[in-house]
Image (cartoon, rainbow, N blue to C red; front, top):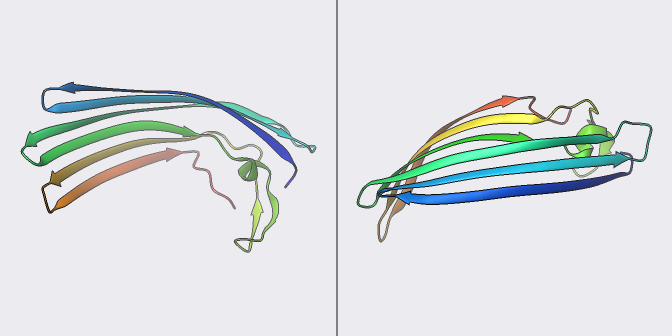
Amino acid sequence: MPDTKTQKYSLFGLEHKQFGDVHVELGARVEHQKIDVDAQKKDYSDTGVSASAAANWQFAPNYKLSLTGSHQQRLPLAQELYANGIHFATNTYERGNANLDVEKSNNLELGLHYEADKLDYSLHVYHNWFDNYIYVY
């Protein structure tokens, strides 16, 4: 892999509020990434935005129902863009793709929580939708 220099700048915020038996949280993050490459490959620069919203409803003593939705954008790492050789730790040959786009996912999760003195449990169902999923090949 060629020598690279990665710079990342991020800004995030998180807010929460209680409405009776319902606790609501909102979050957002903006991240800018720039990768300079010491080779005859193109440099990388892009910005990703992620956001989430969650609500927890205490509908009975010891019980909470939660719902979370999020949109996330993940910027590719230098090795995902520029690798071209053996990765000795995993004994694999990795090949990057300098044309990768931002990975995007939309996520939805529903949960049931029980908390008592000697027993806690949580049950969750979720679904994730991906676009431009990044993987090493």
